[in-house]
Image (cartoon, rainbow, N blue to C red; front, side, top):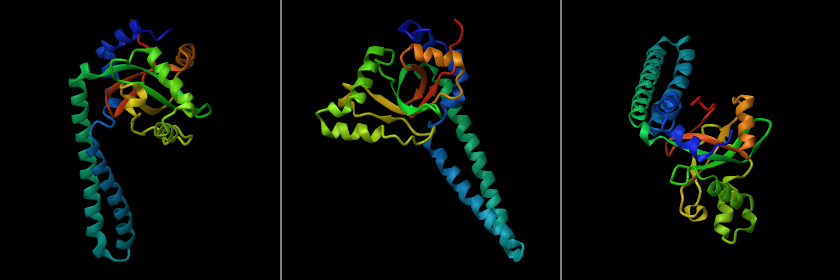
Length: 223
């Protein structure tokens, strides 16, 4: 199956498809969620610490209970933040964009790859995407040393993990278009979808709900 403009446009108008990825679309939507997560982590450590001490000194029991209460409050806060984020995502489905993406460098064993995509007007343009990929592959020939160093640093072979936030490539390097680099894992894709990606010269499809998030499409719905 070729990931052509007709297919991409069709997918972009499929609200049911977007709704099915809404939970993943909330990731990175509200960065404030990091605060209760960090506090909960610290409180968990405190609860463990005070629980151990309270076995020999009961006066520390109240500190243990306070730590547990903080953990519960943080969990509730995370749930509420995520629920609000999902509501916002579902209320703005028209803003979610289907984008063509391309593998750049990665690990064939773990199937995690640095990839690029754009959410702008060129998001369905495979020629544009290939041209940027070629510039990255041939970065040693880039006359601008600042761009060369930046791109080499962005694509150095030490994959950061699947929760890495999309990073914007230098806009002058990408001809004025906002092109993002992000890591994607292809390990959960079925064989048919992986064959489709190979057929499309390592290009695949992502759904971007906002600038801090892009979700890999695991299958193409029937249409």
